[in-house]
Image (cartoon, rainbow, N blue to C red; front, side, top):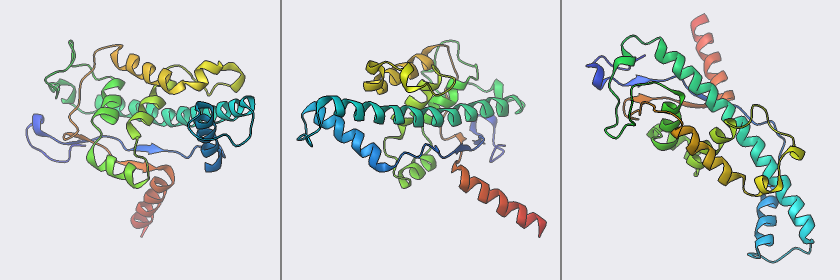
Length: 220
């Protein structure tokens, strides 16, 4: 629903919330740190811990695979949110007729597509969402969301370790970045102004507690 009733071109719209679920991968922080150390040792940037290069390579690939899985599941949440946003737009009379917010919008602009919300999340992240991500300790959120979306354009389920080439695992971030760029450029989409299209970010547990509190208030 819009948060105010000015002319349509000035209305501020509240999109569905973006709800992020825990990964349930049981990957301890020490494993991610071990992956980073292995990468640095293989690059010669820090001294070796005595492990042979083959063992370091195995540790690196195992860590990279864990990162791919976590990003994949994050991307599932983001795609779920983008689908909810498209459904929301379809139920907002008159919204689809609004002009695009960006003077540099792509040719053929006017179409509401999932890419509209992907770009809003990654390129024009609303200030409140940025602030919350930083409070969570997520500073490189743009790259994380871009790669999560990119991987979900390629995989419908997290791939098994043995199905991924070593080259892909070592450099998955570059491939995921390229996949995201291809996704945004695949078709024209409406560009959204973050001052006019806002949403709230929740962890799933936080959102559940909020709903429970609301229900208890209504029951009382």
